Length: 470
Image 1: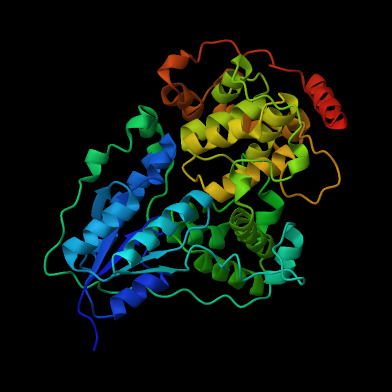
Image 2 (image 1 turned 30 degrees about the vertical axis):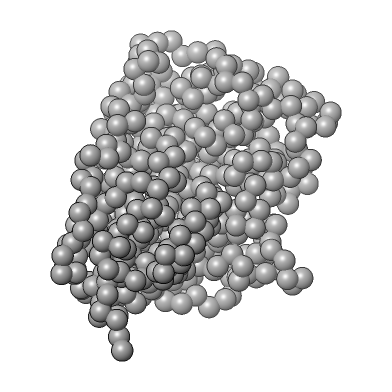
């Protein structure tokens, strides 16, 4: 006999209805579905930009749910306690969610599952965040991958299930439980005036995410490999934002890229490789969760990084290191909530190599400032560029921001776009930085451009000396 009791569906970073096997199964169960979002113990730790972006995702998803006859219940508190209370209030037996893989989320979800089971309920976690579950992809020896290239070779020809269509309707319960108001959560508070600057650059919601993918596939996929490293060019997909919040599913992106590959689009294979790089980040964060807090390679534990946040670190955060490409990239982040991937490598290398500051400083600051912040990608990205993470390169990589600028921004279009002090006529995005940054910094477009916190040559020498002395 089929149950008529409602299913509570806990949405976290999966704010979509298409490519969502779990929500499709819930809709096909002919049972009421109660969609829930919690401001729980993990979400409370998000940085300012992430919390603001979460509020935008929730707002758009509420509209999406109304289109299928449903609504969103908001609750604030410890996940296990709030879900248990909701289950008792609504008479639900089943509580479902899609899996997360970073250590903080796993600890939370383990507690939730244990609490609900002990109380007689039926919790269930589903796949949906990745192309491949981290334990399903193995080396020939049966272990996990520690280097990206072998993982790519292992998965590139595997079948990926096509994305499911969105349900046309979610059956509503006879009565809805009480819900918090999104505005009462005040998730935008920590952003202060920066939220107004960021808002036009965000691409929020399932419909917008699919439109972004379609635009990329029709206009830029062919030249993706050749142009993706030039930050002034509109050459990338910018889907990291929507993947981070689950507004588009990875299988949808994979099959779009695969169609491009089969049609002979030159950049399609490289695009698919970047999607698997995201998988690799989650593969590592699941199998080696210490990557989020500690050096992935323990032999780097004696590298003399400083964790002291001095005047030099402040200038790095402000985009005032005196190195134009570094500063332009940092300011892009404040104005748009995003940073070009080439910029992320350059500012990361400059902080950890030229300035000899710990990667954790950068990791935490990106978490505070990026609207596409992702716990696995952020941790692996910082450790990769610092040298302490997974990388098959047999040398100590130090990006030279001056030669990088000559190679990837030769006409200084990117630098002029975001760095008012170096632009002949500062444009709106360069000037917007002074409205987006904290007032406490006291910065003005009329300030002189600073001298470098460390010269490129001297910084390189110090980094190599520190590396050789390990």
